[in-house]
Length: 196
Image (tube, rainbow, N blue to C red; front, top):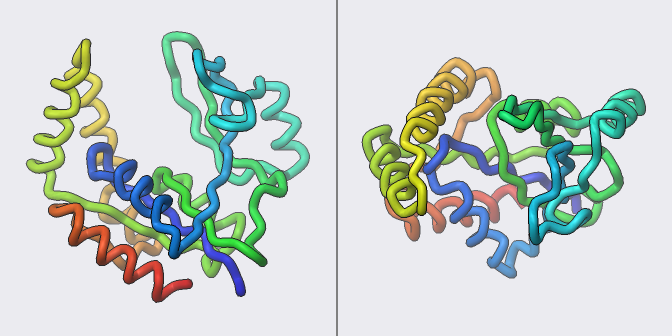
């Protein structure tokens, strides 16, 4: 058996987290996951090595110099730059297991460059923009303190990040329309089965 990395991506509010959880619960696939790394401070209730491997800028630089940095995303926050990244640290055993990951189009491209196109299977979720905004608005309204400006910023950023030319450049050929969860999930499950 040669394991695969099934990589879920799509715009914010396209249903990535829900699909990810449902696929992880499916015992037929027995997916493994990876614990990512971050330089951001640990939050209350998080555990090092469970939620993330927490490190600092020096730790990130050491990993980079060792050639073990697979992909890196940096976010400018009011508390400084927070980095989230994947490290070639022995967690991944493609000789024996299949993995399920969730990320961005850019992180997918970095993973594909590092592990090879044959190891990665993209699961690209899409949804009509009006429906996407309606879902995002509903999710935001349910928050104790809605952040509508941030919701709009994410939507505009996703429009640029998931531009058609970028999707093509990443080699994404198959897309899954997440208009109705059960039907979309069934289609994805059949696709995964065909790639295992």
